[in-house]
Image 1 (cartoon, rainbow, N blue to C red):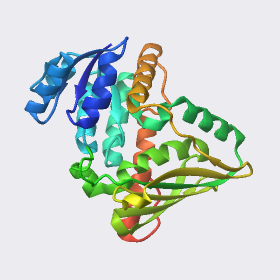
Image 2: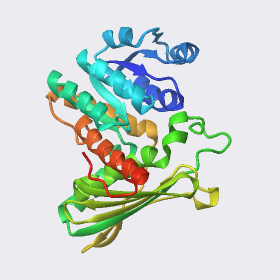
Image 3: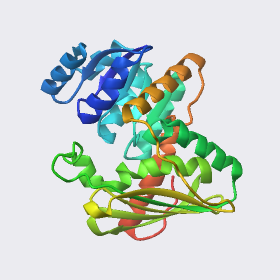
Image 4: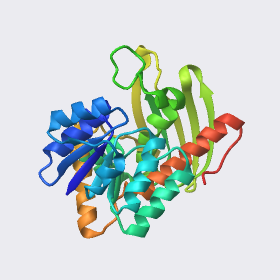
Length: 298
């Protein structure tokens, strides 16, 4: 399958581009980015064409992989889907449910395959754990701590304007929700408050009655960096395992799943509809934090 890469940042170059260039069933055709010089450099690295216009690249391929800020991604994903291209997207799918809905509608209208890349969801140990946990049931809730510290010298993501503006809720929050929702089910209500260092503290009431508590930040003190996710209930306490693979390996698995979905016409557990569900919870948490009351996801 012929792929176009939309984006030229660190993630596009070191993860998506690397995985697609090495994939035996994918042909990386070209790259487009908002910085033409970076697009040319990345094209030279992988021996592909740098496109001046995103729509020209979309026209030349069968699928696009997107590594861009969510608001830019949602617009380009919509254009690609309307052109009949399969979508391999990054998280979060969009910043609003309205934008996410437009992408979902276009994917469904054109019968396309879609995958949203929640990194841990493409590691087999994590998928096996979630399958067992969902089958076991009896969970009262989950506790998540995702304290990253990206705004230190040398971090490749520290200069990202959208991450500085939106914080951990929108960057590490999608990863947390991607493992909570398959086990605890849809979210009915969200309450969130802000904390020191840009933290978001989020309380979820799932329709099942289970409760999730999430503490999320991208600006943790270095000594406080932590990543934990523990379900608790009848089974005791069960920690989601480490992925055990590199981001490139995970993106390779995501590409495999997009190819299978495109060939078989089947939906993926991490498709655009699931990406939209995640956006709805994040949007509700953002609103709750801003207005100071509980919000139901749309």
